[in-house]
Length: 224
View 1 (cartoon, rainbow, N blue to C red):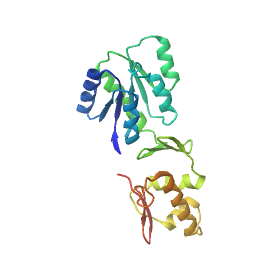
View 2 (cartoon, one colour):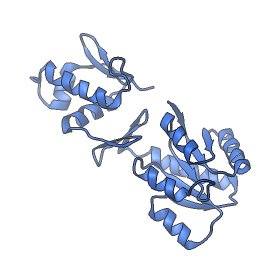
View 3 (cartoon, rainbow, N blue to C red):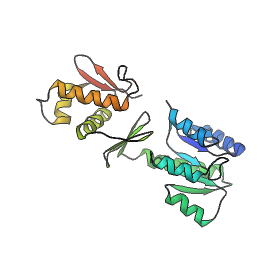
View 4 (cartoon, rainbow, N blue to C red):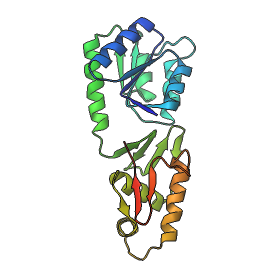
């Protein structure tokens, strides 16, 4: 799964391509999707931190796409549209849009707005991200591309501890102490929780991408 900073969903090819080129030139890795299908195909295989969404698309409305996205993700959505009525602006914001930018827009201003939103979004210490998943520490929820993934309380606590200590081997004894709060929790309990987490976040539980076993020691949460 590839990681992008920005996804543009707009059927105006010339404008979208020039925006992509401009953003990429300034280090904002950007992809362009011309319609709803291309948008969701992209999101099924990639991750992005912000979406620029037009309202008037050839096959559907950006309002519809926004509503669908808001059922599964809270990443920032900025509407970009030539429509100027207050009703359109209010609707865009009320259904989950984070901002409304009117076309034609100066590329430098749009870039500045995107950078500001990315800075706030990435600076949120209450959100943890890995792969296509996001953890909201305040709400104690794990979100995937298809919505919330239900975790039991100890599964959630274990997953958060693993992520917060990513890329280092964590002994079983440390997990017993830090997650369960005691030293007498057995291997069987830990193994069951690890197996359940893998079933919920790994594509292949036999060859896990994230939660890897360090034989004889414990586990490591691998995150590039």
